[in-house]
Image 1 (cartoon, rainbow over the protein chains, first blue to last red):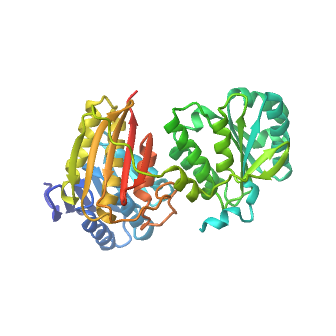
Image 2: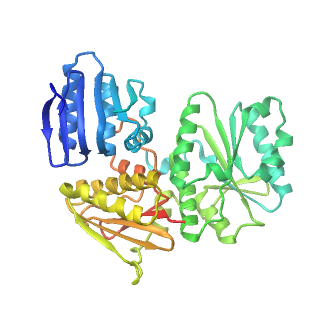
Image 3: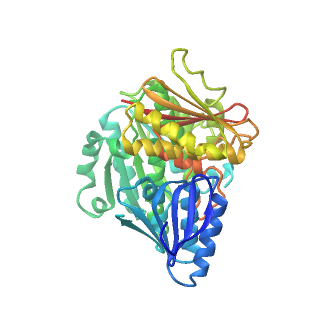
Length: 115
Length: 320
């Protein structure tokens, strides 16, 4: 755990943290965490006002397409979103983004980051 | 969109064009493309290198030549679901500018099960672009193809070009009827010698389902990128089953005819929509039910669904 991050959700497979700039997610986001994921994304982006929400997925090993759609919807309707994924991590998250049409949403920016 | 709209304003837009020789192909294709120029249409030609070579001299480098884009059939027709997505993206990029005219000649050299998926795709095309300003003509080489392939084309195309005239195809089936006619009954059981891996799953052990699918795929020598594709596809279908099929489902996996088969079955409470996941989801439609299945179809070599009376979905991954 990184100092200053606040654990706001946990289940056996996933942990969501509130950071100074947005969210940090660890583990696997699927049907179990879906209701929390949608709520936390919306709440975090609203709390930043007009600022850009940074969603750090570099410790995520799985995110289902509903999770990707929530990211896209959040970027399109609430606030710009910067999604951090790890270069060495599962590229499927980025690929799912493309399959779900994230490339047409300019307010969603993907950033590869080496941890 | 209702089914009856497919025969609406743009009724002649999806045509099968049987031809028996290179001369017949050229005699039809050149006027078809020239007409596009008169209409100010953008033209996409997806065909074999041989047929492209027949057309090119007539297209030239002038006004028509600049408007015609050539794509090789082998690269365009990868899997039906991916080709549907590629066409959809192509049409969306042109939307609002001008009409689009397409010459699309799929390959028909597959095994029967895979070949069927291309006929199904030809049928579904009728729904995909019913409200777009697109004309698609699909040439069928009667000198090389099995007669059954051309007969199926008459079921999947509302219009057929016969002796240079566009006529109604009397064998045409609306896509939903095509699916009902061709996708009846249940799947055959896995063969007795197959080693079948099973799991009863619910929301809390979807992670186990993903791990089992990934392990099975790795054990069968599937490449890394495809392992994660399969894992996502299986997870999407399983998630659908849990959300709409009663909170519990069953996974079975085995190897059959050179394919890794991943089967997901629900409790039989959700009626089957034969069209689920076959057509691109509408943008911004977050509640779309077939979206998970659309993604699964994009990620797998082949996806088949049968009513049982709920859902049984089989995902196929070629191991060759």
